[in-house]
Image (cartoon, rainbow, N blue to C red; front, side, top):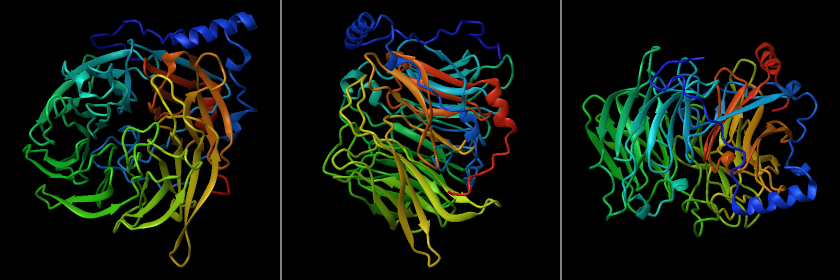
Length: 536
């Protein structure tokens, strides 16, 4: 346990399990009277099943290439890596016994959780107006150091963007190869902040780049927002994108900025970067960009998709709701979903030219939509070479959500793309789980499980569960009760897995929750040989 820094020794305040809406208070009181207990049977933790540890078998996969200028192998942004795969090498919790702990500072939570080379948590906290970069003990959730980021202006409430729909200013950031947090701010700057490197260290602002003149001009009180920043594969430039539709480069050495505006288009989702370019999806089209060696932005190709007739229930904007995800090498694929009616489609797009090579419809007609990134990878043989089979997981977020209550339709679907010997492709939906959620879920190669987090639909008060789903079969392996009440509500927050394995974290609207395996389960994970299943 680390016990240094200016806030060392301050107690960690756990999230309360009694933060209820008025409706929950009424229902919970009546249930307690009727059942003679605080929580009826429907609210108690469900059985984890018979020895879930036995299901720990790794998924043979092609490992995404390591970006040379991003933190290696430990989750360096909201979606794990430069390919935005949402898939961790480490094993998540496998049970059967798990413990839960939490941390709160009142209303507010964490958009992105990353891990430095010492395994400590580096995350940005926000309560809607204020923002703070934090270093935390991954076991005790104790704050070790902090760095104040610019807050939203006093008139932010007039901008028409509610706190739980705001996607700018550090909700997305990444950790670089030197353990520096590269953070876009509310002032449309990029801050590069070094994490503490020793026991008496503090965060140090290394450099700040001003992009305020390189965004879409808007009439007061509205402002465009620099929301996403990633490094070019060559390391000389930052790529950035704004919600208003600006794509730009920043010369890291000189600070020179060059931009291209996507006229009439907006960007809602994070982007991906590879050796062959930068992949960004707007509300109209999917793009691959490059620069000319001097930072000037060029469009390699533009591929339009069905943006749908309007904003679907539960979505932030019209158009694709997924971040851009990459699979394979330069001859690989880009994956997004469209916004079509009556059903959305998973789109597999060729990276070389932007051609859609396969599409498949998802979920129930009229109740189909996603506003969450897919998880994706290419299957491998025993040598680690790709076998021409690609898998994605897609979550259904369609629903009439009203903060703080989400009502998503069921559905977490696995879709495979299979390459034939003649070079053609076919899509196949393998399974659809009835799980419900609006969570940025994660896949663990180490445990062979997909993890999501959501609300139980049956009880009088909200109860929140970590759910593990078998990647091969789509069957639920276990559900772990994290807590009750709105303090455990993750409201489109993300899950994260510690690089040492056995621990999952989820952000909530009141803080951070940590779910850890028992010592026995962790020992099993560490000693297992992870014999993969014969079937993909």
